[in-house]
Image 1 (cartoon, rainbow, N blue to C red):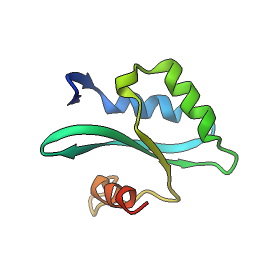
Image 2 (image 1 turned 180 degrees about the vertical axis):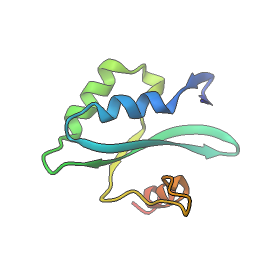
Image 3 (image 1 turned 90 degrees about the horizontal axis):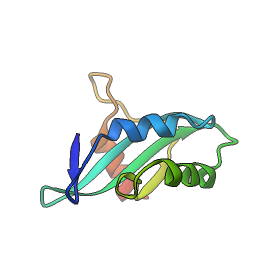
Length: 99
């Protein structure tokens, strides 16, 4: 559970909705912080070759409140994992900064 612009957001809900798309293999949403405050949400997805990002964005706009919509959605080839086999969100943020 995170707080952004006064709203409580469960990022797992966003991931669950994204992974309901047939073209999405896996997804994770990462909060981006500045000065200790969450300023935006970035979703990273691994998708099938026939995946259509615009279709997913339209679906999310219909199903999520505006404050839960990811600012950006990045399609990546593979998720980076930490030594304890969890998705490495710090590495994902580095991928985002370099994109």
